[in-house]
Amino acid sequence: MTHDPALARPLGAQISHMLKDRGVDVIFGIPGVHNQEMYRGIEEAGITHVLARHEQGAGFMADGYARATGKPGVAYVITGPGLTNIMTPMGQAYSDSVPMLVISSCLDETAATKGQLHQMKDQRAAAETVCDWSEEARAAGAAYALIDRALMEFDTRRARPKHLQVPIHLLEAEAAAPPPAANQELAGDIRRDELAVRRVADALKAARKPVMVLGGGATIGASLYPKLAEAVGAAVFTSYAGRGIMPPEHPLSFGASLARPESARVLNSADLIIVVGCELAEVDLWRADLGSDAPVIRLDIDPAVLATHQRSQDRVVLGEAYEIMEAVLDEVAGHTPAIGWDPHDIAKTRDRWRAEVDAERPGIVPVCDALRDCLPDGTMIYSDMTQFAYTAKEVWDMDRPGHWHHPTGFGTLGYATPAAIGGAVARKGKPTMAIIGDYGFHYTMQELGVAVELGLPLPIILWDNGKLKEIEESMVRAQIAPNAVVARNPDFCKLAEAFGAYATAPKTLSEMQEVVRAAFDANGPTLIYLTPDISNAK
Image 1 (cartoon, one colour):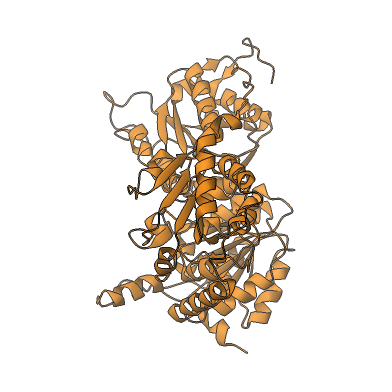
Image 2 (image 1 turned 30 degrees about the horizontal axis):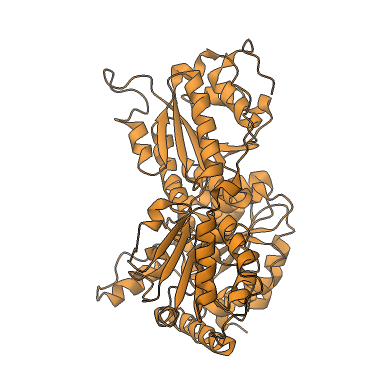
């Protein structure tokens, strides 16, 4: 876009033109009287707008789009309830390090005037509770600068959502065109700490039974980690977000099994643990810490992560994991590793843990296996807070990283359907699938209309166990009489058909495989209704 200060437009239109100039092709949102000026320039700028049915759906679509592309997901929402409705997706994006830019309108003045449409006491501060930062632009130049700040931070820091609000009168006012995009040159080698590289490499070469714990922050350049594991004889655990970094059935891989209680014993048998791009959070471990006395080296881009679980024998390295570990791999080239880990023992341990998962949630593992075996190559999966996903995350090995997305940290229900829609919008011609539970489907089922409207070939696996079963089981373990865990469900297939979607309820695993394959070739979404009975059907 040529910068011409004389090319004045209302600021709302200029923002869309600026976003297009910065590489934004899709915006998710809902227009209203307060943010309609933001819609003035969308078509003129050549941006695709996806109309959600609820701002929560718009936010999850932006999240799903961002996870599929690595580019920021952008959403436009109105003042007040539009912003509060999207705060749940913002919280999820914050937990899971997803680049999302939410731009909202805001009232011009709220201190002296009360009773205005969509009025809040402090809208900006409310948004700030669930995102990296929330700022108000009080001039056109400030809006442009804050957008560029957000986009640059997405490229250079841990990706987390940002919120920009612009007063209504400013959106309506004429504004000069934004400045052209600056030429950014991010010098990666400056971030590589050569002393840190040597220390990590020396520690790995000296260890007899090293372990690597790889999280979502290690998915960039993931192909180096199997090579590094083999070069130094390191066993590997991944977090749920790190699945796919190690190839399926790799002899040194313990899989995504950090939450298995026995993993603490395995980790305690190591003499060095390298943690790369993993928070070691409650939702990674489901215990207070790794449970190991071995020295730990942690690599992460976020100082806040490195400040947790610190012990005197541990070391921390702040920086880009890929750049540092690529250099470490070069340093250990030619090293002869100690034979500390027995692949046979690792395989037996994984088999035992798989059996534990199957016993904890009976009947789901065979369905996971059958579903995995019928998917096209490169399928990207978005899952929800449902027992099916909890099981799959432990037993379903991915053949590549960054292809299973789950609302891990914030743990919100209703994520999968709209997030998969955002992913499918981003991945035209590539297979995308949603997995959601019966209760979670209620939260965002209206977004099924968006998938129909867009003609997305999206299989939606709906797992219906007739209740909040995970909560029921938790209550029983806590010796609480289960209550408030059963809700009346609709006929989900008829509901999907009412939206104009396809729907089917296969009775056997082979039937399920057939309808899943067909769903990827359909001209719209297909709801595939499954119950636990399917695992026992012949």
